[in-house]
Length: 188
Image (tube, rainbow, N blue to C red; front, side):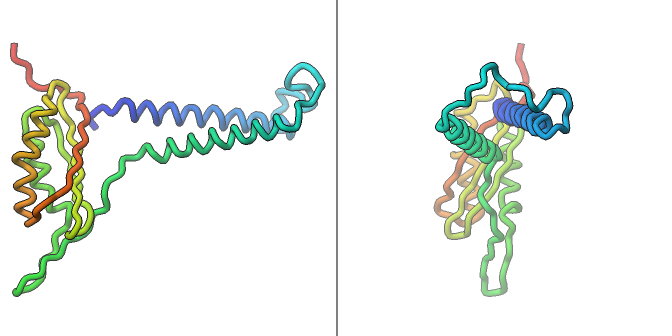
């Protein structure tokens, strides 16, 4: 894959490393407590002093751990890219019925947009039903690509042709830009 989505990759990597460290620490603590890991004596004190903490401290630590765990789980769930669910479109005619896969319908659009100056690659997903379609476009732009010009060309040229081909008056669209590792041609 040529596009660099470094923040998302960094998020996933840090989340994975944090999870591995916490899991290893938990396994070590439980293994030591039950005598499976003989590195430490299970009867030794963890901290100096013999006084037990107050009862509310245990509840505060457990509550904090649950909150941090739920926030981490929410962060992990938010990581994957979500695309709209696509359907097969059916067109009724006097001579019969035509079935059109939504992915097949947007292939020419994505191929056209991929040829625009400053665009390295284009992916499109047509979701929703025929009555309420939604288009999600992910563009991998070159490092020095003009995002405003690319967006304008997509909305002025590509989308009107796609709407005409699908016989739609409106097509709500989201465009996501990602930067590619490939730089555009340089003039010197």
